[in-house]
Length: 205
Image 1 (cartoon, rainbow, N blue to C red):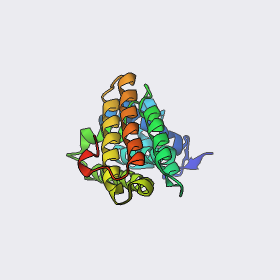
Image 2 (image 1 turned 90 degrees about the vertical axis):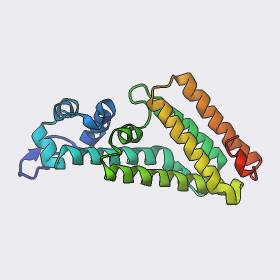
Image 3 (image 1 turned 90 degrees about the horizontal axis):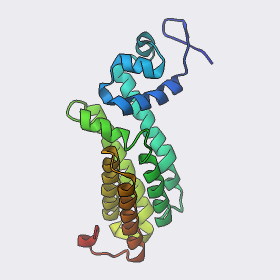
Image 4 (image 1 turned 45 degrees about the vertical axis):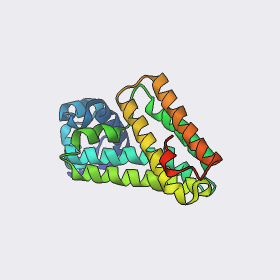
């Protein structure tokens, strides 16, 4: 359905679709994507981009928010269920592997743009910090039944593994390497279930 632009003229595009397409555009070209590249990928004129989002920078941040919302819905929300535990974390790791192995958009968009812009974009750094906190809190809650007081330590170890897996995918590691890394992380998580009181020094061993 058409909506009305700030100038009062009908807007001839779907804003949600534009944001989804913008995810693909920034994944392809990074945060340095030109307005011309965005016009081509989104099928929207520069004037419409500015009328709707205010600037390319504001579109970029709306796009990152969209991406993180998609990750949260697809991968993390299932872990919020009351009965979440080790089995659900193993399923999450399998789903994460599938997510980051997509040849059309490998890795993690957040990590991609963070590498480019961390020194110049405090807002982006804050989004990344909030995202890591969300992961850590979700993992901790899922690990509490088996890890008890060590749940946060184990959650941090799992977070490190997940971030490393994402980075490897962003660096276009081959599928067999990503699969092997995923299985190694899963084996570590399973060991916490079998022996929740693993010494701290052996968390990653």
